[in-house]
Image 1 (cartoon, one colour):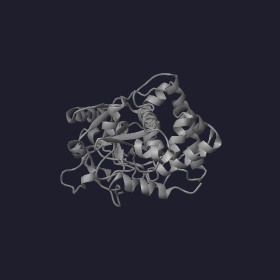
Image 2 (spheres, helix red, strand yellow):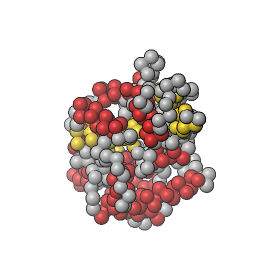
Image 3 (cartoon, helix red, strand yellow):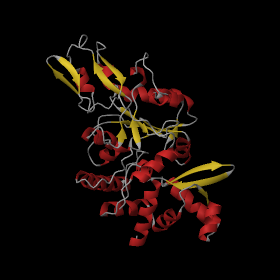
Image 4 (cartoon, helix red, strand yellow):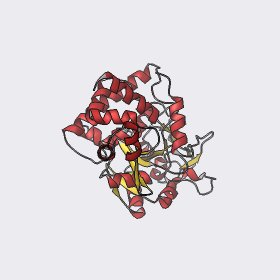
Length: 362
């Protein structure tokens, strides 16, 4: 692609928001060249920020509707565009870089040279972004695109809990639920750095799940199957990370702290990560603690320490996932409401607007 197309595509991706910025760099150019053809990149850069049909787009670009439709369908199948049918007509909109385009290249669990190339390029690009961030450049948006949500059974029943703090009701009211491969663990496995945690435990929720099933990126599962997936993820010590929205969820990732960038960023700084911490924080009852150390092994953030034969929680590191609660054999650890807990955005549109406005110019 030439520089003009890179510029236009970068601008379009920036408008789409998401948790990762589009910054021109060799690895970024390599990703775009691998994922997009030149024709697809040109069309993607022209797409409006609102969903559009092939017929409407053909009028704007003075093209043949059938050819435009075919190209849009190809791009939807590649995980570049979100697609949904309304009133017997199909509409398309470009996804953010993350969550969206990058994950969609890997969440089928595909193993081939293209997938390995995307994994290598994205790891290089991620290293570049983290290096910029470490210098104080602030390339990541200040508004997290995701949030941690505690394990339902570990939330005390006698506490007042906001509806958005419980995960299972989102599953109960979801019309569609899709199962996909964890793109983070799969990405590193492609590069020879496999994780011992399960990969087939990430979920898409709502219209996104239907889209993924329609285009072969994931498969629809029942609520009962989703409950089983969540239980398996919890038993494996994975943290529930969901979209930073309150009314509905778009995704439920089950993350490890060794390969998932959301948790890795929280581990670097829990108050400035790519995901918001949960509404809870762990607390230890000294009278019940036996200093067995099970909580230390379970905590993904290394937030629990043993001192003077008593477990303690470092509040600046605790993200309120609740995994230590289920690990404690005596019930000494409980989740307590967190002071000044972050509140998720009502819906994806408001979240995206906040993310875009929080990004620094340039």
